[in-house]
Image (cartoon, rainbow, N blue to C red; front, side, top):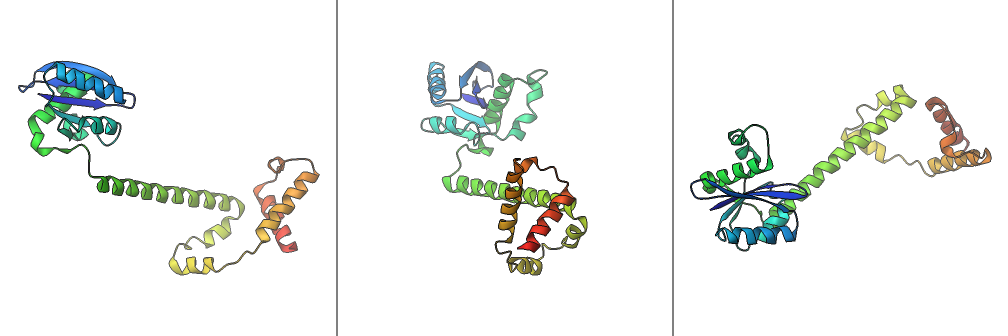
Length: 222
């Protein structure tokens, strides 16, 4: 017997097929340790204690379930692209039960082509680090774009002149610039001026040009 599991954030849908591909029964369990135990008992009732289990998205929402079932079952990862072509055969529309049946059918026909659901810890760690690296690059790019957008509002000409500052020689020159504590005292003075008017700094309704000229006036006075 083979078991196909369509996993989701809150619950999983399970389908049990016999060796000929006939559907025996379906089940819905919670995405929890109790749900995993319920699945074990259900499989035992149907004589599928040693059944092969296929899980789609095993490294995502199905990771907890994989860890709970790997002790007594062969648990395989079923890529989504393998089940996509079989879903229309289970009637119009999309249903969790139909997806679970399609996953079980892939396990039944292509078991030798599927890999284990739980990858080695080193592989998982490298995958997590790669995902973090990509997210960090994305966040850095977004921060740079926001900064350039603000700069363009204040001084479009100056922003255009530094369009090629991402080159290594230009970056080395920028690192050698020492602003000292000028920016800090400019911010302090602006806040003092705001407090004298009994208004928060956010209440200063200055245009971007006025803000820039005010900052330069305080900077030159330091």
